[in-house]
Image 1: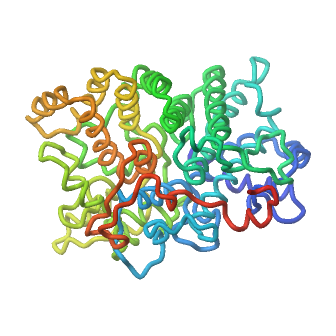
Image 2: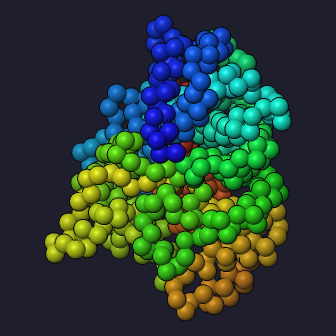
Amino acid sequence: MRTSIRKSLCLALTLVALTSCGKGFLDEQPSQLPSGDQLKEAGKKSEDISLGFVNGVVSSFFKALQSTGGSHDDFAQKAFDISADLMSGDMEMRQSNYKWFQLPARLTSWQKDEINNYSVWRISYRTISLANGFFVTAGGDETVPGNSVAPETRFNWGQVKALRALAYLNLARFYGGPYSDATKSKPTVPVYKAADDASKPKGQSTLEQVYEQIVQDLKQAIEAIEGSGKSRPDRQYVDETVARVALARAYMDLGKWDEAYDVANKVITDQAATYPLIPAKELLTNGFNDYQTPEFIWAIDITKDNTGALLSFWGHVDVFTYGYAFVGARKAINKNISDQIPATDLRGDWFHPTMGVPWCKFFSASGKAAWEASGRQRYGVDRTWLSDIVFMRMSEVYLIASEAAARKGDDATSKTLLLTLLKQRTRDGKYTEVETATNALSHDDLLKTLLYNWRVEMWGEGQSLAVMRRFKNNVERSVRNGFLSGTTIKWDDPRLVYEIPQHEASNNQLIR
């Protein structure tokens, strides 16, 4: 796996050379993608093209500098996660001399000519382009491959379906905004499928149509992967569990609580033993830095060959890694949230008591060890940038299932699920107290408790903007925030929704 991921972009770039006489499609906009005939021809020229597509699509979620020539906040999904958390206000950043991520912190990244906006668009459509290229070579994307197709191909088909759906989910969340009866008919983004002539522009699908495509892709991904009988080599690839968590996310955005509960509960029922929650005794020492952490459902092994160095999640969030958090552009939990963390909650110790940085949640193992061994306790000592990254973990699944259960009126089940998580997040000797208090919660107070747990448990993992919208939670920027300090941002603030980038709007006459 490590070798194939490392070589994936080389193989994808070989495909580019085969499919274009001019600019390659990895550098093109969605209105300028290669034709099906070009992709079929490329498929004839390399027997490894299927694997190259799969690995290329996976790499598009973590490779740095896919949309710009040198922006240090251009490293795909984890950069999107930071932007979303800064926009929501759950993550705060000090003022600094470095421009990276200031736009989302200032709530100006929505503008059509801003780089953080363009990065989500360009990288998401790069993922979609690679995915559709795979489907062209694999016979299409409409029908799940049957038993006549090799199991490996069916498995890869399902993986790519799930990854394409995740790209569209990013587009829906950033460019579509909150989903409701009032917004579902809003023109959002173009939906490109394998049968489309992607060298020609398309108009925007509605937000409802984008989510319909996401849900269809994920259901088909699950069917294809399970029908293949294959298992992924390791958790860097996608399997049916990853697809189910993505589907549960989409259902939560849509307010389909029964469906979200059913999907999340199946993951818990079938996979809780495979992906056990980080236990309380390891919560402050895990560091979220090893992709093989048992709780992690989908995570990437960062190596010398694929690290983005400074251009990485760790280069921006971890004070023990040499990077922007170390030199002053610190990402911290909103002080108003950390002030709510009770003494019984172990997660209070995830964050520095005065700075609020996640020094016991996200930390380089070698960097923190060197810091602890140093009499001067220096930050920023890890200059290898080899800490791994996580995209999905089991705690999110428990929160989805618990919230969905509460929203559909089953508070008892909601509390049971939440307490399963809290048992591993509570200090020694305090669980009975927490259990009693949780079981006594009214429905409204249960929802407030779930909101609190989302904001603390998933801090820094890119879910806070979706949570803010779902709970209709207005967020006050704390006094520690260097941007819009003391300002309350409403959950439906128009600055939380991106405009179509200027480049696409100028070149696609069908954009409204």
